[in-house]
Image (cartoon, rainbow, N blue to C red):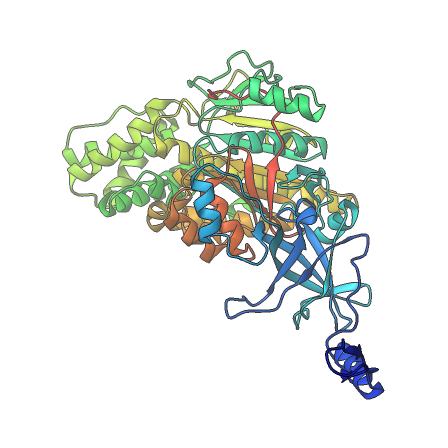
Length: 615
């Protein structure tokens, strides 16, 4: 400015402002351009802008600031597009927030704290903040892993439902629920393709977290998609899924969704002979027997927890029983080509000796114990009584000793025999084993009720045989479908309380049994046979089992040690989702599938059918 005295002493001074030089304006324009140009308003989808990084910034995430009126548009798990100032475009997901922060002062400033604790209301101007995890960079119409970070002050847009579903790949045949935290309903489903199902699934969570509801809904979805489902139900809680639910909470949620309660069709209930079921009124109920010849002798020894001495005597008796079957021409039968081929394919680590029954083995052990004790002949109930001389000759040739161990083994086998669940012959003269071929029908749900089986050893024997029977039947069905040039029927086998069957402690002592399960898991997936491991005690599942699983539904898990261990075993789930695991409400779950672009927090759909043992 230039001041000029226009009127002499005591007179006012007039001020004149000089024009800004062109050089200064040019320099200002260059400075604006260097700092990103003029500030432009947000587009219609814009919600905020990226913030400068700080020493606390994390790799792969950026902080986004948004105006107060935009906070509601960016809930957790929202997908965003970031248009960086360097003309790159990134995709991201909100993993923390939104948080409301006052403008120009800390949220815990004395001014705000003092008035709040005294009951006053002071709401200064505020803004929102969210943390966004980068999930990709858009390049040529596709997405690649991000190699850089968006620049500060880059515009952030929120994506709509349709685009979010496309990017997260939430479309599919098996609907699980709705993405949690969104005002608009975004369904989460997974496709029925070989790369997803029948890959193996783990459903974990504490008691009351909603696992049974999730299982029932998933099974109903399997049925609608034409999957054959087999539930190994150790508690009997799924025995009434053929009936509609009467649970008030389920009815309320179903009503809000516009759905009616509904029982599943085409369900069939199986239970062991001589054992009860939770639902004796089921319209399609049948009993079944276990076939001892289908259980590997090595798996049987493990499950019965025989000592080393008892195992030695068990195998010696097993060999004598096989020899007696050959001697009596019970197997292989004379001039029977099928028997000879079956014998050539026989593998004792996979199955038991064909046509060998528990009664045969018990008679060998009983006669051996009597021989060692010099107590005369034992009472035999099998065909071996017709060749007692040959049996005694073979027993004598084996040079048995230590009668105490033989009596101990006889007692173990006797307890199994008295249960009456092995080799039970029906009215048709055949052993009443499950019809595995019928179980594999499209859309059929087979409920194996093992709730009246107090002995975990017996229950595990049943599960081992059922798994192997299903696998063998699916092998045949798959080969027939391929030969006929048609798609095979997918099969899913659900194992409830999996920790009791495959606990870390058990598989150390049951290497053969676990190897059988691992073999079913590896070979089954290629033949459209998948396993579902369900447990309320995931801390008891060994790493070997966790390594078989590709997909996860994780309900509330309160134990911090278990969460830490699962974090080491399950990849791809970000820290923000692990942190909410202990506080999940019933029905909420973190869902991680190979088909999804990233794990999601999901409000699982309710079960339209009835569950037993639910308070």
